[in-house]
Length: 226
Image 1 (cartoon, one colour):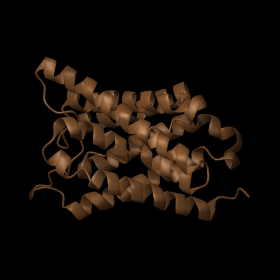
Image 2 (cartoon, one colour):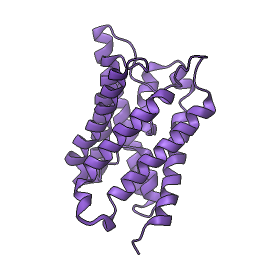
Image 3 (cartoon, rainbow, N blue to C red):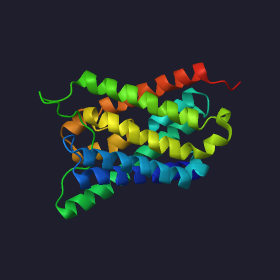
Image 4 (cartoon, rainbow, N blue to C red):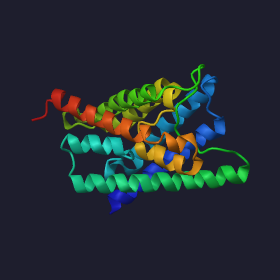
């Protein structure tokens, strides 16, 4: 149970801090400084939580990572399912706190993911889905590699590598979907923001899960551990 609670707390912090910064900065693709600030917030949240709860639960705080670990043989199905449940609970709690704060301050939005404007309307569904699949694949592959036993002493820096990778992923992906690569991170904010964020929520569940599964398949092909 302590593992599950750790995952809940870690995901809550990720959503509260990452989405909180996105709302505070008014993250906008037309303002590079807000994109960079939001990317840094999510990456730093992961680094902070990795060194806080990593020794307890491994600090997945992302159902796509948990799926990647399951498919690569690092955990059992029942444990993976419980991880995902508590990650979503944590995301909902973090989103609720953010919703209360923004409402009290007269702000709107909870940093929910959605298809972004592209000049001619919005990013097409296929474009958003492919972005989530490919960028999640890269992110989960980094996680599997950075935490692999074959990495030896370097996996002591896994939290830093994973956090920096998430910064990079956000810088590349925000233009398309606001960057999810994490179903829990999308579910929580969408529940409170509603609108098209809720209508398009399936993209941010299907895409990251598909990307996580793809990453697990790639890792199994290149992993040298017997």
